[in-house]
Image (cartoon, rainbow, N blue to C red):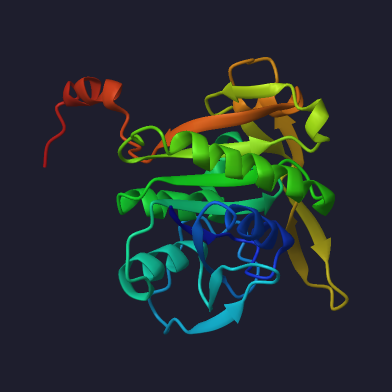
Length: 253
């Protein structure tokens, strides 16, 4: 099995390194990741400046590594179309520090990298852990390795990816795996209005997270209840059930 790994926390992040070390036990791994943190970049790609690539060594790992001065989506496009001699069997994006749940996936560089792979017809998974404690990356990487082996027995859905979130608890406290749909995430008071020392107003994105935890089929509920959530995502955003309705509006030039 040949696996390409990227992330949005940067090539030196512990989540990526731990994942590469673990998955290298079952696959030939190549890492192509941003040279620095590129969180919340969404599906941005670089068009107006050159992309520069540098080989790097992944610590304690047989994987080969490339560092790119671009976004997570850049890394996947560049890897699949220029750097790699073969098409990988699977793309993994992560392990991200912090969950990627519900509507927040729209902003996620981690999920967007996996979407970019799916756009190119390569099976992919986005992997995130629901917190910032590095001590839990090992457990998450072990589960990711198991998941890679399990899905290799099946035909991966076309034009789709899996968004996987792992709760921030000890392995013995994980209750199981739930196949979920995207939950609802929204924020109140999103911007904090501040004043700098020169008296100029600026805004800092913050806000209070409001989660809907009553929907027990959602990824948000699963993580709150110590389940691993696996959500299949289709990148076709068309609202098909509204097409006939909009046709009745009789829009004209």
